[in-house]
Each structure stands twice: as structure tokens, then as C-alpha cells.
Length: 225
Image 1 (tube, rainbow, N blue to C red):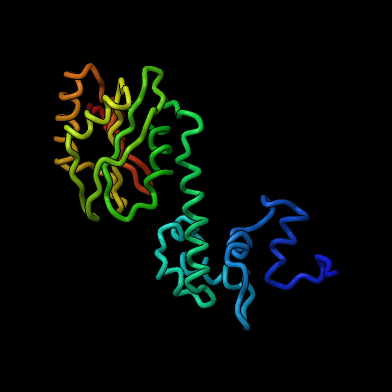
Image 2: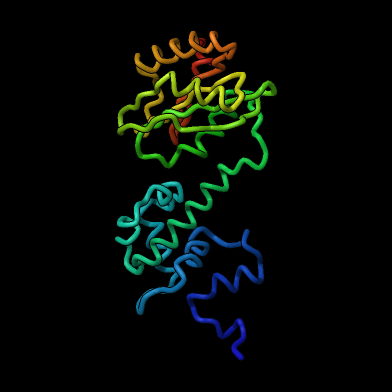
């Protein structure tokens, strides 16, 4: 029977995990386990390092890769690319898992909550966090999705959802894929429109937060609400 010492080169990250635990593995080693096997000239670990080099060793950028883009790395075919995308999506869904309702106490917490959910979007999306009386998020929903430069939010859809989720207050949010965090005039007008409409339902718009990978912009912090 083969021992761990006899394992193939491609299996050595697994060996390290067994001996030292998953926390001891590098990003490349974790990717290598998902990749599974290498080529005649490269081990799975070397293929993983090549993949990381395409995005300056930034896992966040890999999270934005399409199936075709993953397959551009030598040693990653369709099956391996699908496995990688599945692993990425599981990590993304884990962040979204509503096991414990998130309590919102500051714009920074709102931004962190939203960045984990919207950071990999390549187009602009408008979402709303529906909060209860304890300022905990009952539900977060993407209301609309547009292009790279904008999206449209329908107030009727927003308040229908708010009533369905027993919301007492709302936090409006959208991402800017370009990285520019400054709100447009349309962003400001929509915020005012929704703030005024919320009063008819005895609800309150607590904030409108724009997020990107670089940071966030809070209407409440800037005195625009």
C-alpha cells in the first residue's frame, strides 16, 4: 500500500493539509487541490501558480473570471474550470448564508456587508437591505441589474418587497464597477424620491451606500439624507 510519502507531486498539497491543517495552505495550494492534476510538464501546484500570476496573485480577481478566461491558463480545461467556478460560488454563497441576521450599526458595517455580496459583479446592480426594528437585515435583494454604467430601480418594486419582508427601515445600495464612488445626480434624485415615499409606509431610508472594491460612499455620512 502506498504511503503519503509515495503520493504523486500533484497530491502534495493534500498531504500538507492532512498533516498541518487547511489553514497552513497557501492560495496556490488550495487552488491546486481544486485543479486536481497537472500536465505532463507542470504539477497542479505549478498550474495554480500560473493562474494566480494572470491576476497579480489576487483571488478577488479570479472570482470575476468566466469559464473561458479560466481555460486560458495552460493546464486548465473545461472540467477543471467548472470545478474552480463551483468552489468560488460556494465561497460566495457562504458569505450570503442567512444563518444569523446581520445587525447594522454603522455605514462601515453596511459597506462590508454589501462588498462581500456585490464585489464580484461586473455590471451595476441596485439592491435594498430590508431591516427590522433591531436594525438587523431581514433580507437583501437585488432589485435591478443594468450595464457597466448604470441601472434603474422601480420604487413600486422596492416597497412591495419591503412590505413582504416586514421592513421597518431600508438601506439602499448599489455598486460602481468602475471604482468611482461619487454619486451621480440620478443617484441623489432617486435617494430623495425613495426617502419621501418611505414615509407613506411608516418606513425610513437609513442610508444609501455605494460600494466598489476600493471603498464606499455613504449618503448618511455625507449629510445627503
